[in-house]
Length: 406
Length: 231
Image (tube, rainbow over all chains, first blue to last red; front, top):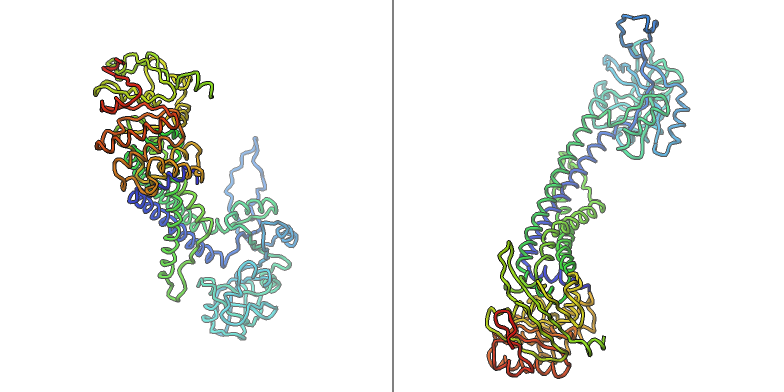
């Protein structure tokens, strides 16, 4: 064994109470950090998963209709005009099949689905409800939103006759599987569909409004023959959505909106949660470092005689420095391994006790190797840095003074 | 190396001075010490308290630098050496036996003796262990190798310290009142041991002592009074 390690371990073993104090500090610090990261990551993942469960990562739409000026102002001609924004009519994406092929060719994109959506009424007997028509290609759409997993009754089977409606709309209309519903638009077009599936996406508003029909039916009803109103895109890296949406917009000439922009409020929440978590982690690390440093400073004073003897026997300043840095590092590493265990146990226990009314866990426990490696690395480096001041002090001890002051 | 040890004295001090203090108020403790020691000497350094014996020993032991004069260790000028080199030279050439033995309490007798060897080589080897056992056997502690210092008597602790001082087989051993806090019988035993080692291996000894009885048994006596060598 290297003499530096031997000395460091012996010094730690000799000052048992001090070592335990330092270890305790690191264990608690790392435990808290692991608990915090794992809790926040778990909560955020479950929130994002819920949010994105019914949303595309990026939605591509045709550019807005702009009011065009007939007379352009110039240097010689001033134009006084009150320009009103145009009412946006439902318009199609030009050459959408090509756009889809283009999007599919990009490696960041995992799924693309065309959508024809617009307002309509659902009529059954005396009940009339305002709904949102969702004209989709079922295979493509389920790659974006996993509708099959939301089905309560029937299946997500969309054909010329068959449609899927939400559980709340079914209740409002008093419709069950196999019942017929008439869809009618404001300009009088109508079509009759059969309820082949009833879904529950977990959001009441969507359960009440969404009616899934084929792309072609929606095109007919909304007078958008051959066109689509938007393209849903799923991507590999969720958090690249904002950047990627800009790139896709430039590529296609369409407008692109990422889930991060659509859910700006949520993003602000997640970001401030992260910020406060980093702040807490930082101060925990700092206080652990102070703990290690203050214990080691005392230890240097207590061991000054031994340090003096070692120096008299030809031990270099650098070696004394290394021995004390090692002590900090060893405490940091050992404490962080124990702390990871403590943190993991805490968060597992906490997750077990946080149960939804329906018996499922509020959030999944996220314990990832890289998180433990990071905690161990940070704690080890913190230990070494915290030991720096005491170690320098130890290495500067004058052996004559150290030996004389028994 | 062998030429050096034959033709040059192991230690040569010329007009060594040491003053302490700062801000203009200084006290000179050593006023120009000149002293030469040859290989194999067994020398006593005596003198009243405050005569500068400890300071002189620290300077010879390369733990302190003199403020004037020169110190040649085996013919090498030490005044201009950087701190690191002094430390290395100290580890290789000088063994210390202190009055209060100064063993490391967390280490066993064996580990204490191995320590200078480990520091020299940077790691622990089986050969170091062999040598340490041999040395402890030589000082009469074959059955105490795995004892911590706290479990040993004063005389035994001092024997461990002697074994430690001899570990790297240094040409010079400095002993600061090695028998200072031992009873007469134990003191005699320690003194005899040092003398025997000097005879056996030719190690040079410089022993600071208060005890005129012991000093008389040394081959040479250097007396220090008020920072000057008087005999």
